[in-house]
Length: 293
Image 1 (cartoon, one colour):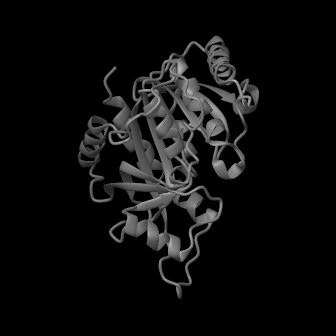
Image 2 (cartoon, rainbow, N blue to C red):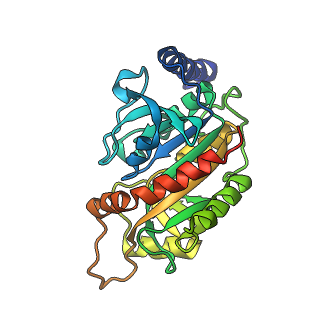
């Protein structure tokens, strides 16, 4: 009789205890008790500058946290107030392309749940596939295509821990309809509705940008934008029964023609984030100010 490769209960307990211990450590260092979290994508770290009365903690100083190595990601938690609400911002995230497992990438999301976070706003930089989208536009995510997940690389793979969520969570309602409705109404209120869309985000693992054929395939599948993050975090947040709003900033146009001279590059992504910083900050601050307590 073959022995099991691992003890499911022991494996779950070790991970769960790390989440709990990390949350306890953070709570012991701050009096802030956030109900809202914001994850800042590439070039969008300035969102954390919205925070008033802020306290900052470098990931390197937090037990069990890993460092963010991606350009434009400072790698720190920022606590304080945005729009009159107590929030925590991840000023930089972890990515699978950095060499982290999907379970490590989503560790901070599980910690946030244990901090008391109930609503999470996830942002990202993405390449535009939809011909109606222009560089600098924003997209409210209504759904996702998780290419690594279709190949079996899902943060929920492995023994399920019922303390986090159910074995088979539904993904058909991941992006909260009421939050999407609020985001659209705020776009109209601020006069941003001409450049704010609602669509589908496709994730590939990176770090290489998409080939021409890959862009064409994702477009056929129904993707409006494509990026290298977000979905592991939103899947995990859904597993944790958190409310989710996700926003993409279109930072570059995807190349879908073989004779195109355009090449995707990190500098363009970061520059677009800087150029649209004020718009993104105003938009997210207004959304947060209208969230239910």
